[in-house]
Length: 636
Image 1 (cartoon, rainbow, N blue to C red):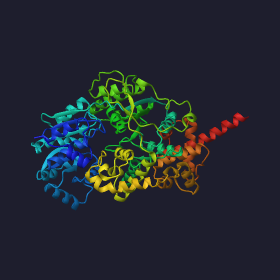
Image 2: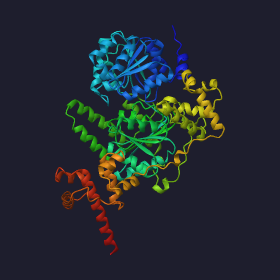
Image 3: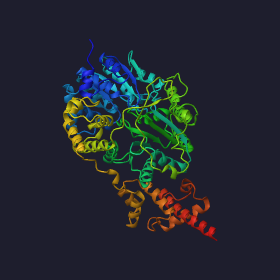
Image 4: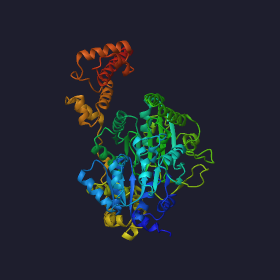
């Protein structure tokens, strides 16, 4: 008998229709079938297992690799009125016992576990007492050694079939080649699985790949970011030090940016992510780990500052742009030295089979970067999809490098860039060049910022991430339609019954305040912390390198790089107490013999107790003195 899916979709999620493939996937799980789903980032995978879990009235067990992602999804479901929980080791034992007891009583529609948790014998034991509807495995490519993010703990999931032979298993991933898909089916022993593979052609994304010299990369990044004023951007940097350097570099140039990396304490990392998610800061500079499960639809650009390890990784990360369907740019600014660094790490791998797989991934990503063939077509072919077209019309190969990236000088590029009009890629046949047509008019920017400020305050009061209060696309539709009643508000996509009940009157009140003349606080007027000025101030106060790093919430290495630049520019002196006379003399003598172009060359011949930071600072001072001498000679 047919099940009414549109009613719960409207009531809980606030949507009137499904995205491509979603309804068929939901029906497959409702029918008790094993299922394998490959759907791009932003395609709506989570709804595909959340909706059938709700309709079936039992508990779906969701396996996910990230605690933060599980917590966000659980909180989002709670906002919608769907009971869900996360069970992990970070919870106190009493709380874990309570969740397990409620799960056995069938109180949850979804229960999130990590693969490590599921691998425990006691977990399988108590799960046998839970009324399970099906298992959903997110990021399923992690189970395959051929996947770009293989995790050994995912291999343990193969026991699900023997432990729960009558329960359906659904595997979900955004980036799996044909080989990985076959491996997923085999490892999970999916029986006669229904397979749903969406197209890998993201026609609203413009892929731009450019090789640049080391000293050009920062300038090209700043030039690119000036093209995206007032919009959300992710910048991926290859190392923690580079993340902090880029964040400081951008803030020095009045482009507010915040860093995100794994060595930050959890609270600060979460706080920085939330500031970016709620549009307090538009540019987030992160390591490649950032973004898994990020639910921000309006990212207008993703910029990579190094070659990723694989084409799958690049596709997944670049795919965090343009999830709202509007045009977005994916810019890869790579350097020749990236290939040497990737090769170095591959050569450290001991396992021969894994080394071979890594070299294959290396050849694929380098081939993509160096090729002069259509970028979209290369990606589709890599994932086993053969397009009927040869040219996409929306990459640097097919339509050329955009003028704003090819600016002749930084001064020309520094002219204020106009905010791009809201456009939509025509969903016509995939064989045609991406056509751009006008879509709905852009929302009133003042109202948009006013409602974003309302969302920020509301989220802060509730202790929730801003996107859980209201998605970007929903907020924009409210701006355009400006509803005057709860019934009008409920006609907006993303406003379900629970959202309307929780926030409806508050949204209408905010709209009335705006109509009466209220406006958002001008956040752009707030002075952005200038890293160089702050560092110079701390130097003047006599702080040590370690103290400055701690006060600025940076690694000592990042601070040493900045201070080295300031010394070389003549804006700072090398504090006499930082490096002992004997060490300094040893570094200077090594520089006289070997030059000071490569720090590693110097480190290899100097005593072990001399650090890279000490070498870097002395080298900066020597370069400044050398420049002074050269200028004096020219005057003569």
